[in-house]
Amino acid sequence: MTQSSNSPAQVFAAHLLASFAKAGVRNFFIAPGARSQALAIAAGQLAKAGKIDLRVRLDERSLGFTALGAALISGEPSVIITTSGTAVANLHPAVLEANHSGVPLILLTADRPHELRGVGANQTTNQIGIFGDAVRECLDVPAPNGNDGEILEAAQIAVNAISSAMGYEGEQPGPVQLNLAFREPLSATSPNAAELNPRISLPDIYEPHPEFAVLSADRPTVVVAGAGAGDDAVELAEAFGWPLFAEPSSGARMGSNVILGYRNLLENHPELSGDISRVIVFGKPTLGRAVIRLLFNSEVEVVVVRSKTMGHFDVSRRASHVVDEITVDDEVDFEWLERWRQADAAIVHQSSDVLDRRALIEAVWEKNTGADQLLLGASRLIREADAWAPAKAIRVFSNRGLAGIDGTVATGTGIALIEREGTTRVLLGDLTLLHDASSLVIDPLDGDLNLQVIVGNDNGGSIFGGLEMASTLDSETFERLFTTPQNVDLWHLAQAYGWGYERVETLGQLDEALAKTGRVLIDVRLS
Image 1 (cartoon, rainbow, N blue to C red):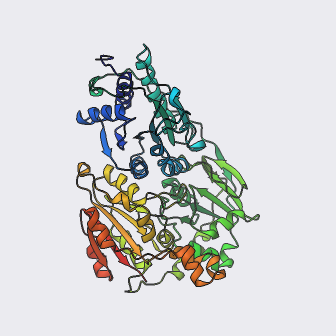
Image 2 (cartoon, one colour; image 1 turned 45 degrees about the horizontal axis):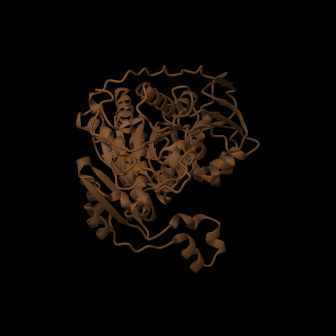
Image 3 (cartoon, rainbow, N blue to C red; image 1 turned 120 degrees about the horizontal axis):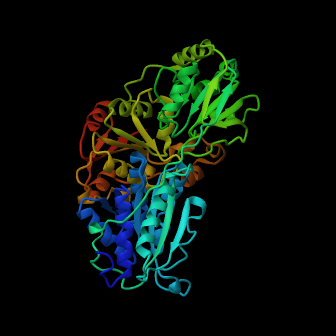
């Protein structure tokens, strides 16, 4: 069945989505809308036939971050379907995060045909370029009219979007926008997208020749692993006996070379930190000012290892090399690593039996196993995790592309939808939760999820207490403008959205709460 329909919009939408499905794209996300109805019907047909997984959300902002979470853990593109107007604009925060963290998203934004743009038509604005340079590509597709060739065009558009979003040509993965104009009639029940067999051919993945740097072995070197660093940072540090400073969401906070107290040592032990002669950077480090100061130190050489997802990171514009792989010209002195290990061991002390931020971090890390996932919100707690999280090979994620608090609950939900083994835990502050409280809405068709939202509840934004204005403003002004204290009853919030609720005030209660299954909001009361 091809164009046996009175709706060119439906024909084109069916072949476009069938092409994505045939190419192996599984994860589709949709919010209801009128202009996008042909896309919705085609997606529903494919989902009913088991060819894609389809999730529906009430609002596009939550939709975008749920799709981002799914792509973050799967490494595969998420397809997002929206109607026109403000629906498209609500995707912007997720698109920005995906852009900066190299997460593949394909945005299918429905639009009015060209003749209805710029004349005041309802729900119509300029959607071309609405995301600026945050998308890898923005293609404005004219409204289909049933001409021959549109079916082949739909297949090619899908293939190109996948290639661009995944970075198959050697570029950083990221979001792609297909702005799809549709004229009335906006939909039909045929053709059935699940019955189509489009002809597609995915391009070969570009394999660049790695660029090497041969470094002198006699310079005291440390390895800094930011978000997205991965195993490569661990392997390099252990191969050459260099101390490893690994942020909690780096994927590198493990192994025998990790220096957990690196921030303390950089700030308070100049007899050690002052001997650093070279820094090798993996991923995107964002959590410590001491590390950033180190990168700006004119006496320290900076070497950047390219990230496949986080893109180019050279904040000091001083990198002597930006390369793919590193080797050294001689044997490395392992005494340098031993000095750091001894200093690190000296600052580690026993935990108390008080439920504070350190105890919360350590309990969450202890509970997570290989089958579990942990998402850290952009709250004070991720910085506490940088100080106290042990070296352990667990899957930790965070939205560190722009490090915003937007969509944290939705991102965690997206992760849980894809990875259903074990438990997905979201560790965040109370303001970060409230910023995305609407994402607690449950779609019954999502099925049973083991999803814990763990709230370090200190009644406001305590993260700002360590910044300059905390000491320059009077307490009342500081509290009003920055701390923004809140007194939301999280039990009622959980009840309203159908979540389980656990109030935690002791370590024993925390241990019991972390063993719960299903959707649970864990309210950890911190002073």
